[in-house]
Length: 315
Ligand SMILES: [Zn+2]
Image (cartoon, rainbow, N blue to C red):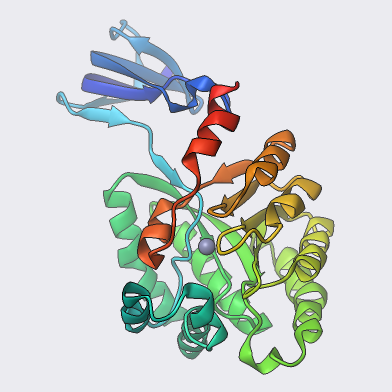
C-alpha cells in the first residue's frame, strides 16, 4: 500500500542528478508528460503510468504541473523596520554597502528596529513574507537571526522562527548569526562582543535547541578572520553545523575558514577568486551564490565563468 498517488499530472518536472554537491547532472531537469507518481515512506516509489496500486490518499492533479518544492537556503526573514531609506545611496552610488554599515546604517538600523519589536510583532510581520515565499514554490526556508545581537534579542528572533515552523505550513531551518556585525554598544570592545557570543549566546542557544546552524559575516565591516574563527570554533564545539557569509564585499578569506571547518556552505562568494573556489571545492563546501543580493546592492555578480570552468565542467 502506497501513502500517496498523484495522478493525471500534466507535466512533471524533476531533477536528474543524484549528487547534492557538484556534478554535470546537477543543472539538468527531466520532464514527463501525462504521468502519475506513487509515494511511500516519503520516497517516490514510481514515476509512470498509474498501476492498480492502492494508496491511503489519491490526489488528482487535473493536468497541472507537479514539481519539487524549492529550498531557499539563505534568508533573513525575521526583522523589524525597513531599509528603503538607504536605497537612494545605493542606487546613486553615494555610498557602498560596507560604508553604509560603517556609518551605522544598514544592518545596524535593522538591529535597532528589531530590538524595539516584541516577539509577537515580529511573528506577525513574518507571516506574509512566508506566505509570499510559499506562493512562489518555496517549501523549506532557512532563516538567520543576527538582527538582535544581545542574548535576549537573538533568542527572541530564534523563538519567532521556532513558533512559525510549528504553525506555518512552510518548513523552517534556523541559523544563529550573532556574528553578523559588532553592535554599537561594543564598538570600542570588539573582543567583548565576541566573548558574549562565545560564552553566552552559543551555549544558551545550543542548550535550548533553537538553531541547527551557526553563520558568521566574515568581512571587514562584519567580523574579521580571527573573530569569525573563534565564533565558528565555539559553535562547532556545541554541535552546531556551520555556514559562512564569505567573500562578498572583498576577498575576505571566509572561503578558507569554510574549508578549515568543513562548513556545510560558503555563501555570496562574489569576490571569491580561483584559490577560494579551489579550496571550497576540495573540502566539499557547498557554494551558495545569491544574485538577488548583488542586484539589490548594485554590486557585481559572482564570477560565473570561473565557477563554470572549475566546478561544473571539470566533473
Ligand atoms: Zn545573508
